[in-house]
Image (spheres, rainbow, N blue to C red):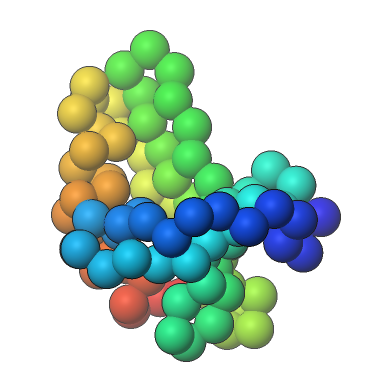
Amino acid sequence: MLRPQVDLRPGDFLGDGRSLRSSWSLGWQVLHLDNGDVHCHGGDYDGFHSMSAMSLPRQSGFVVMSNGESGYKMIQSRLMKYLLDRFV
């Protein structure tokens, strides 16, 4: 379920200008970072936004939830890189 299945084109997934490799596993986006793979999944529903990320080798992860229309933008542009650098 967590093994990469489909490779994606490199992109700026963390909003910091870096072009990162990533792929899809079954239901999870896998970011291939310098310090290992991180599995991410997000969701939205009428003004609510969430993002989760985990690193299996480091046995750590986080979930961020927001109840604002700009929640996804805030999570993506301000929190993801900060949280990934510190927790996964």
